[in-house]
Image (cartoon, rainbow, N blue to C red; front, side, top):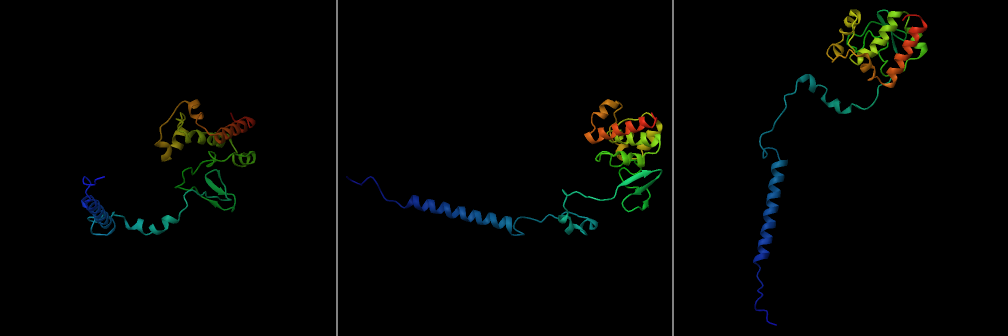
Length: 193
């Protein structure tokens, strides 16, 4: 056989090596631009207020998915809040979302018969405890007393209202349904309806 048609030329080998060298040079330039300051353009800094930056190093220490627990419970009785765990009496929390509520936690905690008997001493308080649950879901009250009371809360004043009580109660959680039923039974048992 004659090998005259096949020439051994290093040209293709040189082209492959040259392309590899160009790739390496481009990669090095990309790394330099991205990593080294000054090569990638001007640095952008956010304008952060001093009161924010004062505690900035502690923000990463906060566990946002943990729950706060307390042995204290708060019961409303005639204009002041009473803290049952420590026995100390405090005034209404002006910043509290549900300050002034009979049962501020009735959307999350099942009310016990003992707690209801201890806290609800008259027809008005019982009705207010029921209305609190409806208010949290945007029920549009018709009695001026209720309108005035719940409109003091921005969260209520600014929410969309629904005048159909059935539609509102359909949004209740199991806890809220149970609490309304217990309060209605208590109201009936005392002849307050």
